[in-house]
Length: 433
Image (tube, one colour):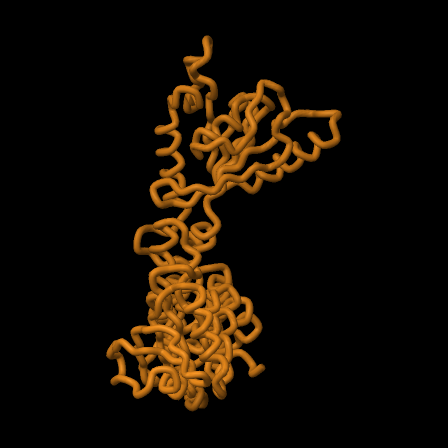
């Protein structure tokens, strides 16, 4: 088999959902895409014009289906190559017969996961930030995930980074020009001072962006951990918030012995609700393991719901004190600062939900705000560190620092130095993408 991403072969895949379905979309991309389409459907229509054609098996002449056919001429296509799409009926047998007929032709083969997008990247149709955004868009399950991924997939992050890179290139050119006049100390010093001031302004901007929330918390969900002593209502609270019976609820202390995670979306924001074992000393070996895991979850929590004595609450940046079982006699009055909750009557759940959203909005990227993933943030930090070293009147050192910053920006967009992570990225895509 040809190497994935090779330019001498043409790839084929189902690009729509798995059949059966009303309509299926089959995509081909590469130098043999047009010849293959002619073999199945006869003369091709003009570029970007949909026509209804009967598709026949080139070898047997058997009618396979009637389909809408579109062709896109390189480089004005999704992949930058010649592309043909077949919109056919979505039955399993129909799809299989067309795929078999196409892959039986010379130069044609089934696509690897993400190979269409990889070719788009290789041919300059998208950059690495757009590819990462597209991968997140395909995996988005909440409205906030969709909006954030779409900003990156639509090139917003690319334009931001390219703007920074252009500024560094201009500064680098001025630094290199100043080196040519290194014998004129007065002129060189003046140029270096101006470059340091402008570099510092860029560094300040990078610092501000690095302080913003990361993209990962939107993708993974805000981790909300319910913790406290045994039998205080943690499992009942998680069930009430998720509106499902995910955690076992009994009157027996120590029922929960493992970590139970319940993903859900509230107002389009992704959360992961976490039920934990009651925190206490125990002689039971299994329960002790559960208590240890609960302690780890408390440290890992983005938001901590504490259902025990407020005086015993762990230190946590985002701590919410919960007064559970507020429907029971003698528990009507909650301690100061605590939210009275009843999983039975629903009392306090709206207030708790609002509190969770208020905290969440400080942790996730704002509406319409771009966010870096960890890889991108690491490269921004590398560029910032290099620029930070440029606060010197030595023009040669300044030029080298600017060069290293430019290389970091190039790694963000995929201009250079990213071969080791491409397979992992494009492996996240489905076959038809």
